[in-house]
Amino acid sequence: MVITDIRILQKGFNYSQDGPGNRLVYHLQGCNLHCPWCSNPESMSTAEGEGISTEAVLKEILISELMFFDGGGVTFTGGEPTLQFDALKELLTMLRPYGISTAIETNGTNPRLPELFSLTDYLIMDFKHHSSDKLREYTGVGNETVISNLKAASQSRNQLLLRIPLINGFNASEEDAAGFAKILSPLMKDGFALEVLRYHEYGKDKWAQHGMQYTMQDAFVTDAQFDKFCSILKNNSIKLVRT
Image (cartoon, rainbow, N blue to C red; front, side, top):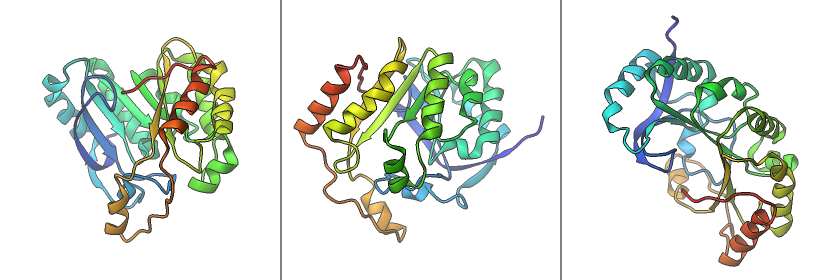
């Protein structure tokens, strides 16, 4: 077996927010999007991060197995974990014989993502905007591949958690809610759910610390906006959850 190095920004345990139960979460270095609201701007660079062999990561995960209570396991997030696709796939394949629950948090832009469906127990995918042009304007990448991967997941998976980061001025209008519903409603089925996450500024200070300009203004979502947005989705048979 070829052992690949994987670059890790940080790691630690988290309960329920990155998949079910208590999970060992690896934040992989690098992201292909440049979201101006990103909470971890230090993860964007592809040149940083600690390099470690997939074999060493596997050993670390196995040693931690007693901590995977309440249906926990290991989660790979970012940045964007699929930027290191071969190393990620190698790790997920190595984990399979041990029966450890695996989860991925992804922006869904990698065309190879369906290759990981059978290796991933819990898939979390962002769906940031229904308009490809608007998404490209804000992040540098459109949503064509995201939608393709959503359709592939709907055809082959029995579990998917979608997440919309709700941001005033970007995707929080009633028209936006209808746009999301038009795409998502035909794809929803048992085991699929959507979580709407309201904008926050938790990562704002990090931008300055890394010499980067934080440009978001007037991005907070009111209670009325949030409730109306969610009601439109619910009225289109989209199951909403909160983790």
